[in-house]
Image (cartoon, rainbow, N blue to C red; front, top):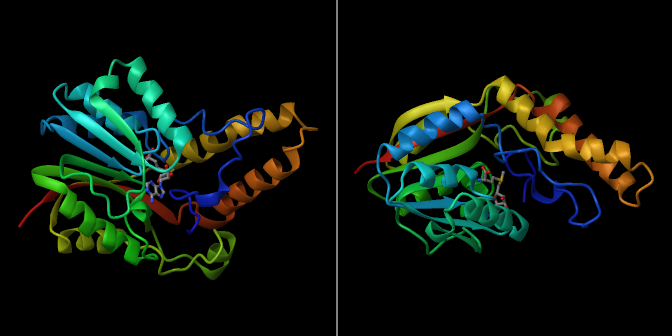
Length: 267
Ligand SMILES: C[S@@+](CC[C@H](N)C(=O)[O-])C[C@H]1O[C@@H](n2cnc3c(N)ncnc32)[C@H](O)[C@@H]1O
């Protein structure tokens, strides 16, 4: 599996209970601000979905907010990571949503779930097929088209190149990063149209949202490292976060974008 900011792959922290914390400062596992989330939820709830499917949901924060705003809706979140699913279940219970949502530990690849009125796939298109990038995006769009009910909505949070990366930037990104790995925003929207959608809304994460996400991704670990310099996991943790930060600052910062496409199925 390719490692990238929306697809951290094997670069996440080890799960040692006394080890470094993991993603505790993030509301969403991606560059998504509170303000943008609020606008998205309002727009999606206005379509009055009764069923929500969140593929590669993590802890499913956006799905939970949609369920709060659409009181007749039920939700299913699918992910492989038990720890994040537990976080989603706990958040759902704390907000009185426990009986309206299921967090299922299973693969989203060729899922038998759905169709649903609202399908979310945020930073997780790689979860929908075994294809390599950029085919991942096309496969995901066709899977999402199959999984959404007529009149429903899909929100795809997907990476795109803001400009063609230089060789130097590619060398500083994740292993085997390639210029053909992502589409441009124009080509990505065209691909969505080609898969049977009209783009209701096209928006992209701002530099500030990226900095909030990238800093929030590691800030709890950085504080832990400063407080536990002699911990048995300190050396490998330091190396991991230093590599992550360098990948961002020397590699994909201002080059990789994330778009949130709200898509209406047609045809
Ligand atoms: C960048 S995170 C995004 C999480 C969530 N959608 C969000 O925006 O907060 C990508 C998620 O995809 C999940 N994932 C990767 N492969 C998967 C698969 N085959 N089936 C289900 N989930 C998968 C990962 O465990 C991870 O939680």
